[in-house]
Amino acid sequence: MFTKGQFMNRTEDFVKIKNSLSSSLKTATSKVLLAEGDSLTLLKLLPDQSISLILTDPPYHSTKKDNIYGDTAFKEDDAITNVV
Image (tube, rainbow, N blue to C red; front, side):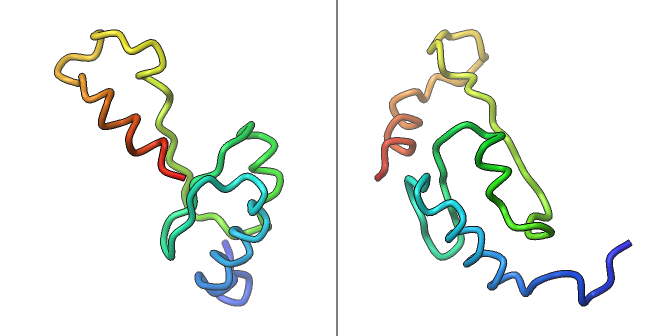
């Protein structure tokens, strides 16, 4: 179990993470960082004890097939992922 002193301030965490990923960032806001690259390489760049949760969304749309019931918003997805 971690003690309070072992965790960085969340704002400090965010700044350190942003700095560590700076060369791979495609989009950065005050609450969101979107990095592009090999996930294992990028994970190794993250500061120790700076991440509480990692959520992934595999590229279900990579083939753009209608194999996911009711999910055909490919143009909308492309608009979001192409923001630079």
